[in-house]
Length: 341
Image (cartoon, rainbow, N blue to C red; front, top):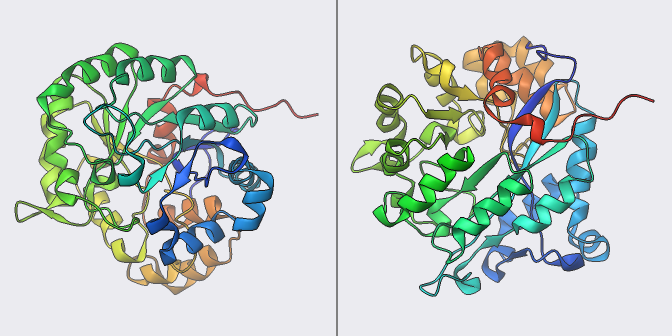
C-alpha cells in the first residue's frame, strides 16, 4: 500500500464539482441532464441532496469535498475543476447546447475558503475573450485548464486555436483534456476525443495531460488507448493520469498501462471524484490483479481517497505516480495547509 511521499500527502489533480445555480453561483445542469438517472447518482456521490443545495447554495458541494478530503490520510489537496460549456458562432456561451457548466469565477472564489483545495480553470477556446479568460485564470491561481471537447463541441486540432495554445505556453498553464470516449453525460461527440487531435497543441509546446490515458472508445478504427501510446515517444510534453482507471468498465486498463515500459514516468495521480462510489468502483472488480485478501482490505477503507490510493497501489502503481501531480503542477499557487493549532 502506498504511503504519502510527504507529511502533506498527495495532490489529486482531477476532482469535479457541480451546481444548479443555487446561491448565485452561475452554474447549471441542463434539463436533459437533470432528468438523467446519472444526476441523482452524482449528487449522492457528492454527499448532498438537491434540497440542501437549493437551501445553502452550490458552494455546499465544494464544502463537502473539502471536508471529506480532510479526513484522508493519503491525499492532502485536490484540484477542483471548473467546466466551461458550448460556445456559439458569436463567441458566447450557448446555454441550450451546454449540458453542464461551472464558472471559473465561482470555483476560484470557493476554493480560496479551504486550505486543501486548488483551482482548475476551464475556458472554451472559441470564446471571443478566451485569451483574456486564460490571463484571468492564471491571475486567480489556476493550476491548469480543463477541457472535455466531446461535450464542449470544438476540435482541439483546429488551426485557428493557435493563439490560445501559445498563450497557454506563455502562461505556463498545463492543459488537462479529456481523451477517449465520454460516458458521464447524456450525449457526446466522441470523435472530438480522439487523442491524435491533441498533437497540434503538443507541437506548439503546450504541456498536455490527456485524461484517463484515452481509455475506452475507438478513433478511425483504432483503440484510443493504443492510439495514444506512440504519442508519448513523439512528445516529451505529453502526460496522462490514472483517474477512472479502476472503474468497472475500465478494470484492466490500469494494469495494461503499468505494463507499458516507461509510461509510468508520464502518469499523474487523479481520482475523477465524485466518480468513486462503490457501484462504479470496487476492489472486487479487480480480483484478477489483487486477489481476495487485498480486495477485502481495500474495501474496508471508508475514505474514498484513501481507498483509491490503496486500490491503485495494490494494482502496482508506483509511488512516484502518486507524487507526480504535485511535482508537475505549481502547487505553490494553492494555499499551504493551515498550521496545526
